[in-house]
Structures are given as structure tokens and as C-alpha cells.
Image (cartoon, rainbow, N blue to C red; front, side, top):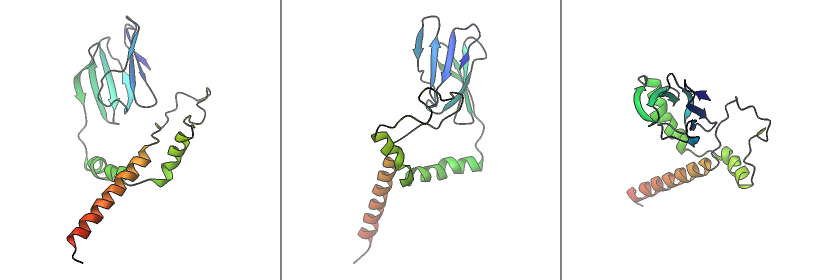
Length: 160
């Protein structure tokens, strides 16, 4: 949580990577259309009408308040290792099924969505991984569809 100088704007970064903005002048709470919503991990306000938002681990975007329009982007150039991770390794890891993570889906269906210690005694300063219970199901379906399409292509090309 951070407050802008003057106290008009309060920003709260939630555990799920979302940023909420509270305008104390008209008591409104909103989730602005900042880039990277869902992956934001920090926010700061150097002046009364500016907000710095950090997301994706290396990107910082300066926004003008109250319109929340981007004013400046500070993004370092990606090195070879980061490009390989972002464009090769991460898509492959996302597409391959993860049967071990199907336990999250079962727990979600059975109603056990609360993480350990979330019943009032959890330390809110500790970052927790967001829960995505349906992600293993989707990745398994995508993988099965891709393998079925590849098998159909191979069988169609071969002469039997």
C-alpha cells in the first residue's frame, strides 16, 4: 500500500497482482486499466499526480493521475536468456499438461479455496502465489488437442 503526497491517492497492490486505487477526495475505489493488471507487484507515488507501477519483474510505467494515462515506460532491453525464457521455455511449460497440479482443481471443486492460514491469521506481508485451479485442465486439453492434430497429420501423410 502506498499514498501519494498530499494524501488524495492511495494505491493497494493485492496478492493476485491487481492494483486498486482509492481517491480520498470522492471516496471512490477503482481498478484502473493499468498495463500488467494481474502481474503488478509494486506501486509508488513520487508526486501528487504521478504513479509508478512495476510489473513483469522488470518494467516500470509512470501514469498520470487522475486519468491513469501512461506517461513514460522504463523497460530494460531483454537479454538472450530472458528472450529464450519468455518466447520458448514459458510457452512450452504452459502447454504441457501438469497432472500433479490437478489436485488444486479437485480442491476448488470440493470447496477448499482458502489457502492455509487465510482464516484470519495469515500474514498479509507475505506474497502468495495466485490460485488458478482450472489452468491444469486447460493445459491438458490444449496438449491433447495438439497431439490429436499432430497424429491426424502424420496418418494423413503416410501411405498404408
